[in-house]
Image (cartoon, rainbow over the protein chains, first blue to last red):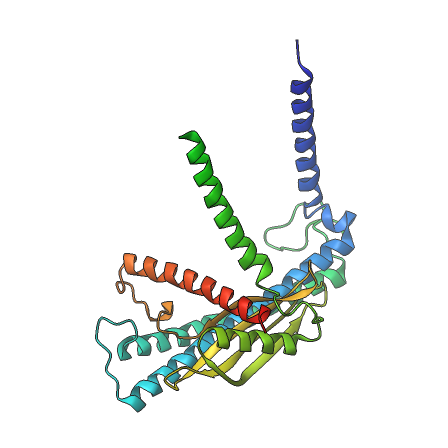
Length: 148
Length: 159
């Protein structure tokens, strides 16, 4: 004989499964922009804006690290310091770190451009009322598939 | 024996829990609760001066301060660099990053540190320092930052 506890656990599991199915279904790119368009586009633009701010911040952090490293190099010159070779902050390591921040600057500037493109894409989707649609996409002409 | 084990685990859990609660909930907005979203400059200056005072640095002036607000949402951010002097009179740049908490509606300190400090990872090369020294440095940085949070919090609460 089944106890009430077993039934309760089974019902709970079924409820969780149904909830998972519902949540996943509502996140489908075919479904979400159609059923909850405002929330979908707002989420896309919000994500784009936050990403852009984050990339700008990451650029600034690395650039300012480079400036701080250059300050330390100037400080070493002014004091005519020669740290022990096994210490962490030596002239060689500071120079290497400065070059590393230059290289990262290039990458971070590129990430900033990518984030700008992402935000522009989100705004364009919002303006066009984009949804994935149910049709099949022509691989040679992406964006042409799917009914509007 | 079993009771002792439970007591030790409970004490450890309490220690880790209060560590996380203090650093993640109590400390970040300390002294900034009264400031609105637009008062980012005041919040940033309080955070910068507090950071310098608790890091044994003399605050000189801000190098720059940025404020970014999201239009499709409640998020807001402000970050900048403060110029400071250490005990030997050498200039140091301090990074202060704040986030507006969308849940609690107040400014929170997020990530602040002395740029290119003596124990910064930016100096690491692939083989130097070794893995043990790296781990020790990382742990000491966490514990130093925690102690600094406590110092800053105590100085805010005892005028």
